Structure formats: structure tokens, C-alpha cells
Length: 251
Ligand code: NDP
Image (cartoon, rainbow, N blue to C red; front, side, top):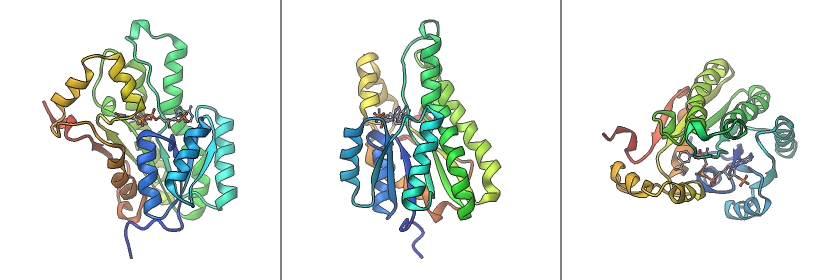
């Protein structure tokens, strides 16, 4: 038995059309899973699907919206007959100090990063339950642990992601569903390229603080994706795993 084989499995990856989500989708596809790439931008999703091979397909959805999420999950289930793996990865940030952040900005970040994970998990649960099990992977952040003056909404959403993980893990363990959270360090993506423009000293700070001495690459998320989505992690649930080149253990 290959512990890491995902042949015959169906994975939903929100934000799978770019950045860390695409890295994770690559790992899942290479392990044999059919990957549903969920995003808003159809061109990015088309490119991702061609990168991921013949079992992959794209679904356009805004994961902050309950009806979009329900329709997305229904489409995946109608097309494949099952949903085994959900990666709650879609995310965004609005970098402002708390006194400058308005209510709609706060809600945008919370809805994109945290409410979406609740909505997608809830919508996938019946499919996993009826199949006798499933895997949910939640994308946190170093901001699940640390704070920063320019990240009140982002840090709140990513701290919430850890606690949502623990709540879902305890609620659904008896259904054979494992729910885990991984915390990326600083990874080179569109999101952090924007951050580097907005926070001038960020690049040097990341290099100085990361023991690995570099930014992470999206393909370094293939391994954690396959581990947490496969039988290899069947007794791992409610865990919080850093993928950060040592950032969180460095003083
Ligand atoms: P990207 O900007 O490359 O990826 C964000 C993804 O989220 C895009 O694919 C985007 O797709 C999707 N997305 C955003 N909003 C929505 C929405 N409302 N509905 C559907 N899809 C949406 O950045 P990253 O890869 O860096 O970020 C991915 C995740 O990783 C986020 O949760 C982020 O917080 C987290 N993370 C990133 C770190 C890093 O250093 N890069 C560090 C820690 C955590 P589309 O454009 O089609 O909407």
C-alpha cells in the first residue's frame, strides 16, 4: 500500500490557481488526485488546470459567498461523484494599522480568509461523511502566532483558522475526517510581492529572521499537501504544522 497514493481521490483547492494553492494542487495532482481549482480569475484557473494535467478542472467561485460555495461543491460532486480532500487556501490581506482599517476592509479579510473556510468545510462535510472520511487542510500563517501593526484583520483571521481547525477536528473525528492547519512562513507569491512593495524593509527582515536564509517556494507545499491529504496522516488531526524555514523558532 502506498501511503501517499491519492489515485481515485478528488480534491478541492480554493485559490488553487496561483501561489501556495497552486503548489499544493501540484502535489495532490502528482500523487494521483483529480483537483478542482477554485478561484475567481478564469484565465489564471485555465493556466493552472493545464499545468495540473488531465484530471484537473476549474470552477469559478467567490468563496466568501455562501451560495457560490454551495454551487461549487455541488458542481464538483456532480462531476466526480465524491469529495475527499478540501484545501482551504484562498486568502488576501489589506495592510493597514488598526486605526486606519475600515469595517468593510476588516470584513473582506475575515470573509476571504476565515469565513470561506467555514463555508467550504461545511459544504464538503456531507460528502466526506457519506464516504466514511476525508481530509481538510487549512492555510494559516505566521500571523496565526505573531502580530504585526499592519495586520489586525489578517492576524485575527489566521488565528481564527487555527481554532476553527481544532473545532472541526473534534467535531468530525468520528466521521473519519482529519482537519489540520499548516502555517507557511514567508513564501514568494503575488501576495507577498505586493507586501514587499508596501512594506519597504520587509524583504531584508524576512531574510534576516528566517534561519533557512531565503523565501519559500510554492512547490515546497507539495509535500505537506500530500502528507495531510493521504493515509499517511490518518491519526493526525487538529494539528498545527509550520512550513516556514524555521522562522517561528528563531529569536
Ligand atoms: P496569492 O495571492 O497568490 O493567492 C491567493 C489565492 O486566493 C488566489 O489564487 C486567488 O484566486 C484566491 N482568492 C482570493 N480571494 C478569493 C475569493 N474571494 N474567492 C475565491 N478565491 C479567492 O497568494 P498566496 O499564495 O501567498 O496566498 C495563499 C494563501 O496562503 C492565503 O491564505 C495566504 O494568507 C496564505 N499565506 C501566504 C503566505 C506567503 O508568504 N505567501 C504566508 C502565510 C500564509 P483569484 O485571483 O482567482 O481570486
